[in-house]
Length: 327
Image 1 (cartoon, one colour):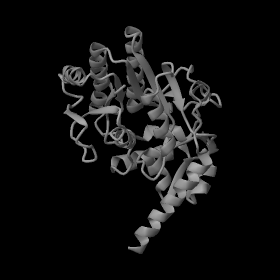
Image 2: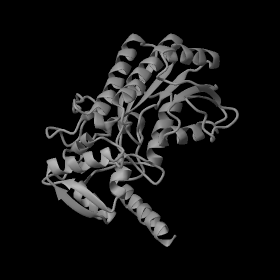
Image 3: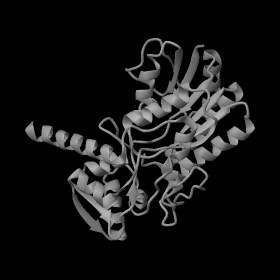
Image 4: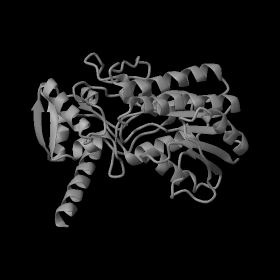
């Protein structure tokens, strides 16, 4: 039976790569909703030019879903590679945009809704357990507006799930992705010649390989037997930050928290850092998520461990730097 999947946020790593995969599956009809049509989309992909900050976005999305007979919606329209300097615009896209999408999906009564989230919503907190399960209450820094928006998008989705019991709803909390095709805070942070860490802190960190996360999302998109709910999508194992820095072959400069925060604030002010300085908390406290539920429910096992992912990324960064020097 042909499945019609609509998705937002196709310009990021996840969106672009998932779209390429989906558009080449014969039994899948792909519908893309975005401000501009990406060049990598095939002619058989239905594209709708819709800005999620438009006050009429929910009605325009609904009309598109109705016209295309969409049964599955994947919402990826979040700032994964950078955070805009305007917190109000970020809020408009990530929270109000999610509200518009959910309104349209509720009216259309889609069969399946998938929200892409992050394990960072658990918060960087000294009281976090070694492994955080999906039942843990998120506790983001209230001064970190970007992460508050991500959590609010989750809360809107949970309310949508209660009001629409016939729609199977998934919230996928993925840990940071690392890979040569990815652009996010961690790839930026680990690619520098010098890596600033917070003196006295050495948190455990986990990553998921770019191919593993794509496989996991495809499983949720195409599979019908998985029960709805919240799932941690994470790689195998975790490593201390100092060990990760050594694997990357970088110079580590530990700094007291206030100095490290000021450094990140300055880089953000100079538009050199893709995320606000509040993100430095994630280099102080552990927020490693437990992937047991995903494994036991679906049988999904990531192919790459965190150590293998870091080693592969370190090789990519060294090769890239060598090419730059040779020019």
